[in-house]
Image (cartoon, rainbow, N blue to C red; front, top):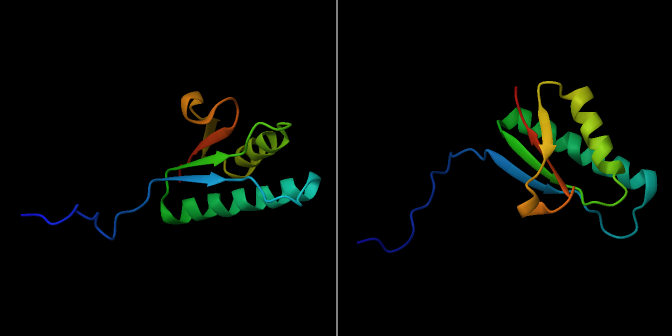
Length: 103
């Protein structure tokens, strides 16, 4: 007789990750975008190092600058990876970008 749900093995690797790039108030303009892109780079480097296969970056709609810069960074610095818009049903219009990680 089981007393509770089974726990996944401790060595199971995370294959997908969701990262919210929204910042607390007080950040704006170029400083905000630079801070967010530094987070993207850190998450990408970690994913390549640890074997994560997909990252969903939640960037919101806004002016579109962060989305453009995020995609430019992926294309220039991570050419083996690809990106596309996240599911509308899950994230709405242009609010998230899915990055497929390939080593």
